[in-house]
Image 1 (tube, rainbow, N blue to C red):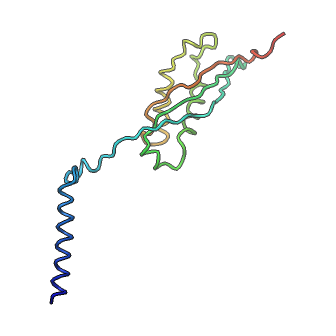
Image 2 (spheres, rainbow, N blue to C red; image 1 turned 180 degrees about the vertical axis):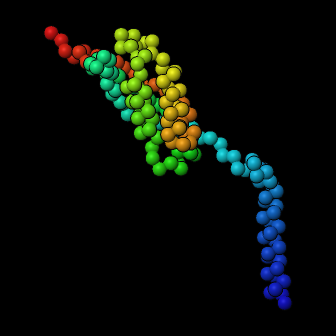
Length: 150
């Protein structure tokens, strides 16, 4: 009989301790607070891409670009592929097909529009809002005739 009462006493103490801890921990009683995980931002640097600039059917030069992006670190852990692959693909497509790029006036190119489009298109392809911001690390235009000289 003593063994049965001792076992019952251990169960009651264990349940009471679990209930007490649940009440004591901040946010443990509010499932909405307990479910929110703070966003951890991480920065990643891409490799340099070279995009050919073709105007009027002729090669004019190349745009060399490198980006830095911030991502949700918690969300990044759930992906099986690196997002920079998609980011670079979107950047290549955007720069290659952009008819507003003027190699004679590179300083007038709308980089804000480019980076905003890269965030949106990359997140759309990934299916999750992973990329928070895209920054320009390097953006250069290289004329195809720059190395030719006499």
